[in-house]
Length: 568
Image (tube, rainbow, N blue to C red; front, top):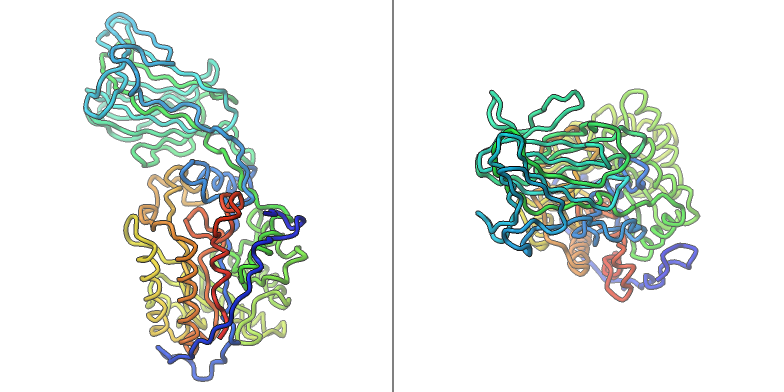
């Protein structure tokens, strides 16, 4: 299977489309009787969100880290590189240890009245390590483990509990002899707390802790962030980020050891389990080459994708993929249009960016509908003034009146927005499940019901085709482009759908095209919009994956999509 344009293109993707007659339909809502109707072929668009800028950019780093865990690597786009073949540096649950003995592989020390040993339970299956300290006269219990030295970020995770909380149980991450992270429990006037030591020596509380209660803790330690950022530490407790980009305690460029210990002047019993150290970023998802973009265009063309709807970012590094598309010798094979949001700017920035966009609308590969009308989606930041400006600037350039589609999470909110800003139609960005582990068939049934609901409310609609929704990868590494510092994960990260098969995605697309053909007065642009070409982080993609290109005899998502009839 060729994976670059120079290798001759996607050899398995030249699949003939069989024309099938689809009946015309009856309007469901107040469609304009004068609306022109698009040609017989239903246009299939796909959303592009191009954050795959590689490890040297903060955004690209975030994408890399979200897709690095083994359970998410099946989502990696075909152009990804595995940079660390064995990212797990330490993974130990102590279940195979000998009860009463020191944990295997750890360096332990125990003063008078102290001990470090593997124990059964005590209140969970398997075994744990007990750091027992009954001395207040200098005795302490310590267990340390070195791992292969790392110069880039590592993620350290463990479970622990204290029989009596607040007894100064401690965990340290070090590089050589330099302590970088110091986390401990403490008992102060405010109660029993988990805290981290700051560069001033003071202890900053993270949250309260209770006696005899297990806590799962994760620490991400980054000695070399991209774009020259200062080294930092993030701390999570039971899935909640309690400390964001805390500075290192001391300058260090290497990470190589974790330590658990008690306090020499206090008594405590600390149980430790499930210690894991892993390279945080073990893949590089970098789409910023012309050869990759050329290959993407050919894949999309062969699967019958008519246009990409680019989430439009006017500044680097998020412009790179769009720039590569526009400079490609293959760009005429797949058209494009813009999806606008607040990133498009305000005031003078909006005006300047709009001038650039309208100039592109005049080009033959900018998607038009209803004859000569440039297609524009707005998913956030739509106002009457902005829509008017888009129409005015296009008219001044001698273009057709832009067909402006606004989105909303309900039919009524989308319709109200369309009416207030003077848009032409409504749509959605994606279908999002309302619970956990929702079958894909349930997700698509709900989305299919939205097509007539939006049409009835607004009159004109662009149906969406969601290929999946599963943003749980952000639990392992929260998105660096979200609100910072965010102390909890986004609520919708807990809502996800089960993975779709290629056939299920193709069936859903066929249903959307059939609905559109049957209801052309309410869908006069005669287009559907797939979520998404490459929203791999959120679980919606059709771009070929590394798994697919490594297994060319399997049915790819694009294979299935290519068989769906678009014509009437």
